[in-house]
Length: 153
Image (tube, rainbow, N blue to C red; front, side, top):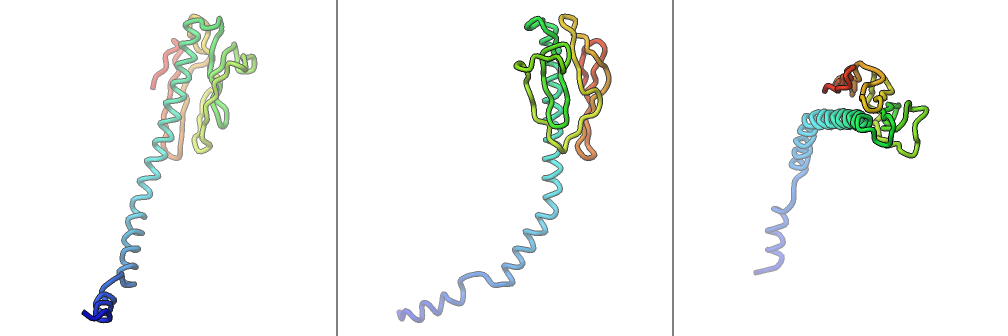
């Protein structure tokens, strides 16, 4: 078989046309437009849940440490702008700095309510009661701190 005939035969059938490439790109763009809001919503929900679970865990840990009398100290949680801190001491300002456990709080997440909760040693009673509202966009979750020291999710 002549080599020129073979090349001529495959030259016209290989590759993609410009119309096919534009069609594939248009389909991918359309799918991306519909799927991206779902992905972003899922990511934001996960971020909100992560902060909610972490903050609830830190508050419960402070309560348990205070109830058990660990280190002969009271324990509490301080909520700042970009972090929350599990601390040992009667207040955040009088805490034992070397025993702090600091946790990151994303800038997109806001927490409203009391910014310092201290549990009294052995009784576990909180210094404040009320609601901590964790918000991200139009989504929010609430942690209730009751006078008995219980934490409701």
